[in-house]
Image (cartoon, rainbow, N blue to C red):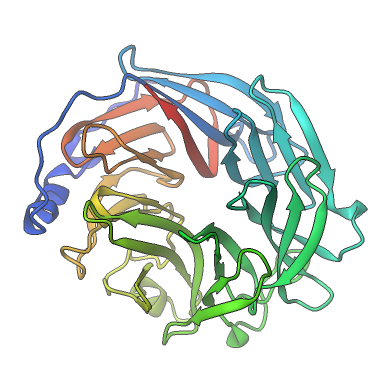
Length: 380
């Protein structure tokens, strides 16, 4: 069946343009990159189908999306991290029992099973390298104590070297700051080893900064509402060099009206963590976040079939940019100068959005359901 949709229903470009104009950020489009390589994870169209991780190749000129290579996975994946040599790190979904490296040719070059480690910790879905690149950091939960941990791992072997306390529960995504320290989103939700939530009245969500060489706690931030679970992170920079850390959140209130009205974005501006836009997505569930134009962020809401744009020039607003079912995985797309677009995975295919360029859509190369996250490897 051919994919048909109206431009009005597909991409809300006019709303985003109004936000950028209000913020004084209008710019002219330049020539677009012609192709992109994207690290992704997916399964077949039906629940229970095999999961894969690999590389997708988007050709904007031919209007075609292809699978460059794919590796079958033991269970469902979560976070992906492209390495400089073309390899891809893939993490098992929470509570993850495996960590894998796939080389540039699409061959598994290293895989570890956490059940073989002495630690009782299991992976929470994300991995990043240290500033020097000789070690990896993984978010984990020690299921004997319920406390959050950072696994410090050898970059080559993936084996664990040390464990650091995250000073919270259920650490999810982590990034480095400009000094090589760790910014960690503690989701704060008590979970069983079967990944069942319990005792939500004990939620303890926080954002922490840990020393990148010792794991020492340097700073902790919390919001007033303890039922807002901080989960995914992205850095965004203005043209003048200001840095904002965006935190995508998921509401865990028992009351459905509270969830629907909950904010989905927190922003760390200097030393202040705030939820600048009180409006959310009507579901209280941000699935992913990516840097957008000049200090802004794009957030996806798969439950609402929506992606929205936030910008510091109009901090109280969230503007819809894409309305399409299962809008989920996001990654930054530089596009025409000065950049600021995103690539968005949806139920039907890949959406390329930019505030000053024409939107594009590429259907999936075969029936497939993309997982939560993906990452841009390169574009030319």
